Image (cartoon, rainbow, N blue to C red; front, top):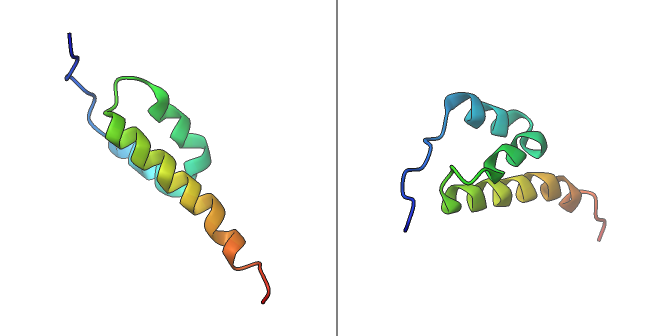
Length: 59
């Protein structure tokens, strides 16, 4: 049995991901969100967390 009744992305969650992704990404762990949406949220969080580190390296 495949459960295809997924929860839509709420505006408050989207705004939370834009402001503080490291905190709001954990709300995507619930199985009620599509797996592709969960993966995208974790990739976005990883990129926003690691991107400032790229500017700190000196050549």
